[in-house]
Amino acid sequence: MDIVIPLFDRFEPLDAIGPYEILGHVPGARVRFVAPEPGRVTDVLGALRVDVAARYSEVEACDVLLVPGGVGVRPLTGDADFLDWVLRVHETTRFTTSVCTGALVLGAAGLLKGCTATTHWEAVADLEGYGATYTAERVVRHDRIVTSAGVSAGIDLALGLAALLTDDLTAEAIQLYTEYDPQPPFDSGSVAKASPEVVARARALG
Image (cartoon, rainbow, N blue to C red):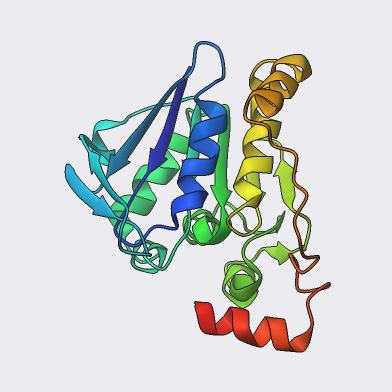
């Protein structure tokens, strides 16, 4: 089972590492990172550097394609070669997925036109500019295409994928092994719950 996660400079770390942690425990799965060129890729926070051995163009097919988000996703939405690759690989996948603003890549490739999808709450207008209808749901599935909301939602997406790729028991075992049992100290994890002051501070973080 081949799971491919493209990385790029200024990717959002948890978008990629959260699903990697979950999907890496799926029996028989191989999770690999690819990049525009082999070499070191740096996350959006600047301290996480990942050495990626393969370029994305070397991948002709995979079972799961997972596109993370981050500031660095913006140039990819206008990169014809990358979008063509996404479309070619999508024809071979069991599931084509995105985390956070990674949905903008799927949108730019034309995969979300006429679909309901989700992304980070700050990227709603961009998503809908590609013909998708935004929903605040944490994970949205349309047949083989699955999108998830911002950053931490990628873990939920990955657990759902683990169940689809294997079975519920395996996915639940992975959830237990990683002790994914969220009990946050604050209830401000969505725009619907957060105060205006929290929203304003969150915008400043980006």
